[in-house]
Length: 95
Image (tube, rainbow, N blue to C red; front, side):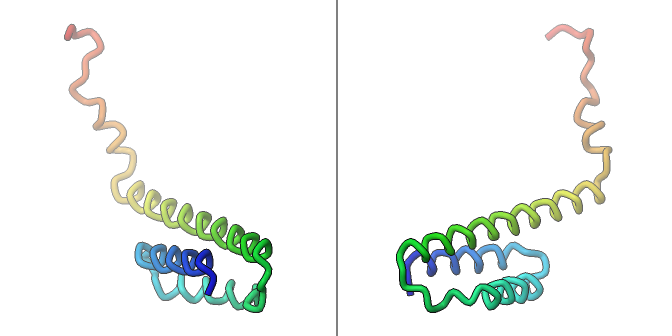
């Protein structure tokens, strides 16, 4: 196995660990990998190109995970957290 492909698979495993629904994430990644059917590639340039596309997809998945976490926090705490940040601050007081 090419070292870049091994690194890509390690990144997949890491993202699966932090994903809220791990089984669904792994199933989606396996489906994408099966779609590509790039197992028989031996050319170095082609391998790097496919790995770059895979890293881009993983980065997109990571962004979606962070967005889901942000939305959950926003729903849980609402806009109260933003308003309570400035309580106790008086613009007329001197420091």
